[in-house]
Image (cartoon, rainbow, N blue to C red; front, side, top):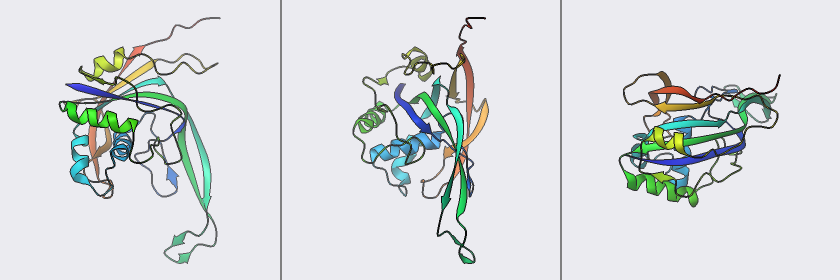
Length: 221
């Protein structure tokens, strides 16, 4: 069993799984569909290519919250939107939710070390630009990290890897959370497991178990 690690840090991240029409959501941590989309971009896997995406989908995923994001939202307008009645006269208004200043350590785990090595190499020299959930949300630190393919269990790897971010200045202390995809369908169900190419957009359930790694000690009055 081996694990490859990704560092997801940036001023803005968005990992939506239930977005519809003009309301774009985000989860509190990276979604599996979003992370695999990022990896697919690094490897140059086209949106219609299920053959090369499918081995990635068999990997289990874990996320360590090194710096929880601050939930934010913004509004965007678009002119020239085509509706069932033709071109809309008024601009379309959309609400887009995102996480500000978040830092996540993500692990992908499987038995095929060669696949994890290819992922690691592609993150260092991606075929297409990499983004944190949306094309305009670029990482502030490289997603690739040296020596980030580890021959160890995913939980042990995520627990032992050094912190990738310091606490936000002035923010109250927060527990560090670890979320792991379970192999026995225990835990919280999330509908972000790709079942087809990203062009077809079919997703099924996976199950995630979360735990608190440590609780910061409160200081002061």
